[in-house]
Image 1: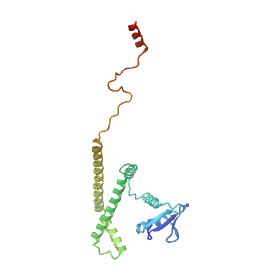
Image 2: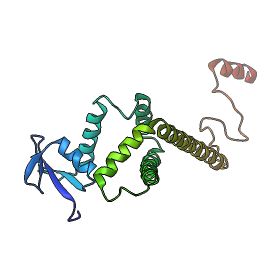
Image 3: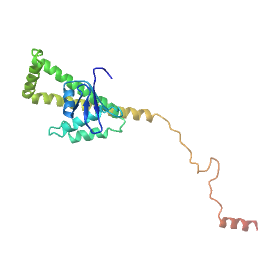
Image 4: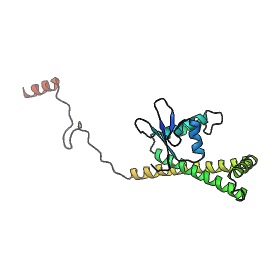
Amino acid sequence: MSETTRLIKKYPNRRLYDTATSSYITLADVKKLVLEQIAFRVIDAKSNEDLTRSILLQIILEEESAGAPMFSSDMLSQIIRFYGNAMQGMMGTYLEKNIQTFMEIQRRLQEQSLGGKLSDNPMLNSDAWSQFVKMQGPAIQGLMTSYLEQSAQTFLEMQQQLQKQARNIFGAFQFPTFANPYSPFAGETAGKPETESGKGHETERKA
């Protein structure tokens, strides 16, 4: 763990202890660390198990339940369906790269819109950007919606292409045909066991 990474311990009573400030904190405080881009790690106080993802998921759950959800029920259902799927690992990477691209687009829009004139005052910069987003909200939303739709379509096309390639590859294999162990061997007459009536006819012919 890096020396600059803040260590937070979670105790059995579910309380979070920040070792940097030597005080107990809440999920709201952890969220503040995320917003301020402060690196941290949450571990179980007894087992040292890494609980960072679990805590982040709790924050997302609270935010999603607060009345302004980011994920629709349909989107969450689609994400759940990828668990256990062959594309699960690829989907995780895909979502991560798209969020990074989204943030980069936001950064460039901010720089182009403000011209870099307010960069010396972070608070003023943030306020100005918020006002700009409110005024240009529909246009920005349309731009991002278009990007996400194109990105989703690209992913679906890639998935279809992979499926097509898999069919082509496995379709070229000649799988051996195994003989039925209960069928007669070649050159052997297929017949049923003699019945009692068949034995009787044979006896009459000999007589």
